[in-house]
Image (cartoon, rainbow, N blue to C red):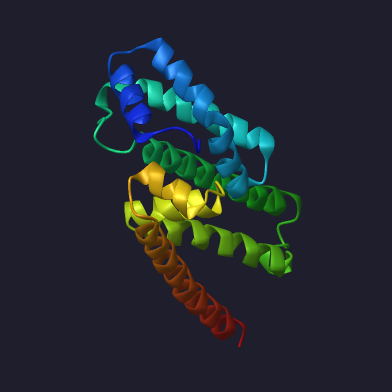
Length: 192
């Protein structure tokens, strides 16, 4: 998605509003791989990520007439993938808990691998902390860390100065560090 301009996303938004199948097809082809990688980051499951993207693109088509071309279609799509992926993870955990309870009612989460639970909890929190960021900061951070774009590429994509992109990323990392420190402090208190 690194070579796709904001103007192109706006054009696709207008095309979607007009129910233009070719705009939808072009958008799908241009964004699928990057969105799949993002879903994989959350779910760590290729099949689930493919299913999530199918749901996202179906939903995008259903709401096509309500899309605002002046708002970032790319950000909307990343947000949709994130929401669907987190819902998938919640359902997966709920089903796992129900299966454990059904197989052995006396066995609960206390006997499960604590490290895996902590890692899952940390991943969920990380996704929530990223979602708390202002839109532009989150977009710059995601493009840097998940899409591996340089600050110059992000600056061109977002129509910002490279220094502004750097500031967004620094602030995003500071935000995540504070949240992580708080998370670790809570874990220490819980284990005492």
